[in-house]
Length: 196
Image (cartoon, rainbow, N blue to C red; front, side):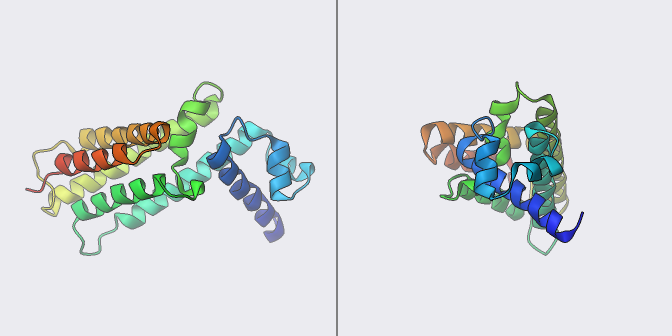
């Protein structure tokens, strides 16, 4: 693809991500996407076979960006891994309640909505959950090694429980439109990542 072609494809993806964050995947019609992006219908089908294919590309892009962000955040720089993990959860809480809905977690937004309507998108989201849990588990193990997290915890199980708790707290926060579930999740996270 040419640079202009790449830019058009990326513009459609970015526009779609914003619309999905505001309205959901099912509610976002292709005509609205194309009108908002300011591109003709043919442009969409030049880059994507279908709306579902578009959704898969968007989820994969989000997954890649999210994992890159985690890798950057969890890179050793002298800060204890426990502090980095708590920073991650604080960022999650702040983004989930940002006025800018495009910063909200796409996994939280899409999981319940598309799980029964797109097997391909569901599988990508399931892969994302597994990979994020692995990254968090790796970070907890580093925290045990650097002495900032107690060696008495099971890193893999703790990572899985924490990630699933945060997904649930984010969903409850959306339903209640309150920050309380995420604040409670922060309290529990601090208890589940005890210092030695």
